[in-house]
Length: 116
Image (tube, rainbow, N blue to C red):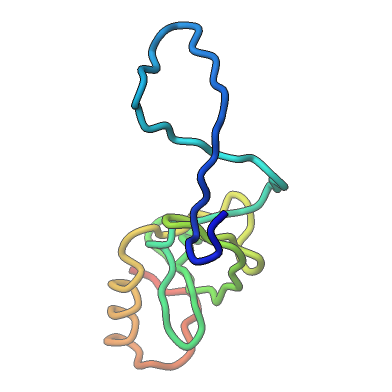
């Protein structure tokens, strides 16, 4: 491993039983080490600010803003440590629009449940 790079050259033996892999092909490899089950949401759902938050649908057409605590992340998803439970309906796109609508309607004070 070269200490100046974030990559390492690795040689892996792959069984090519069905003949799909050809010489010179670039593989995609995923290493499953220390896996854990956790709650993740798309990064697009997170409204960034002083405190990161998400919008949760609490009833049809009614949304609630929740401040969240995040953990590890990758390019598309982020781990949620607090404030969201399994089964909560998270607004994955349009959170900034909900934020703007709420602020225009009520000002920039605390954001409890909001009917849209």
